[in-house]
Amino acid sequence: MRKLVEKKIVLASHNAGKLREIAVMLEPYGIEVVSAGDLGLTEPEETETTFAGNARIKAHFAAQAAGLPALSDDSGIQVDALDKQPGVYTADWAETPNGRDFPMAMTKVWTLLEEKQAAEPRTARFCATLCIAWPDGHDEVVEGTVEGCISWPMRGDQGFGFDPIFVPDGHTETFGEMDPAQKHAMSHRAVAFKKLKAGCLDG
Picture (cartoon, rainbow, N blue to C red):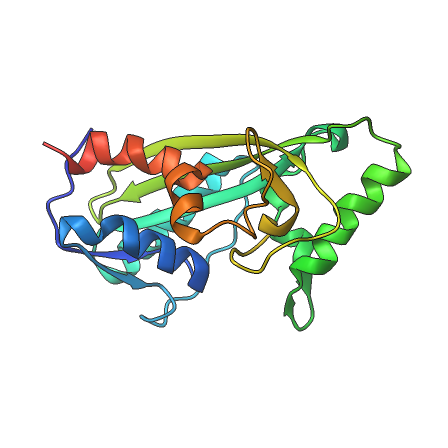
């Protein structure tokens, strides 16, 4: 894997929660992270049907626009009883004319599970794909997952997205209730980031 030697990268996202998580992860390497939103970059249309495909679209778009290496994250939740939906459409389920409404999206997931009378435990996983793209067109892609189950009602306000209804295996708290440092150490993004560190940052 190509080593990241640059000390400034673009996070190809307008999501403040992701920016916080990624900035903390890269801080030990002395890498400054700026978001696509900070640079006034638009968000490209995500036309792929896989996390990796959409991660590549976002990273290459930002790298070309900013002239810097760009890191993108495409992530979502797969609920087994819903045929692994919402999956790559996780954010779309939260879209409203006034922005993203994740409590609405979480309610939709639970309502569909109830309608199907899905068996307990209602297993699910968070998936994250990270892509680093360079302005010359090269990229590296890594993936991470964390297994768990869907819990109701929503609990906790520490995380973002679907965190308040996801309980990771071996725990009783949702990601929304966990101390952020504990979540960051075990999340799907953390699993993917360890692979990225090993390949692109360490050594």
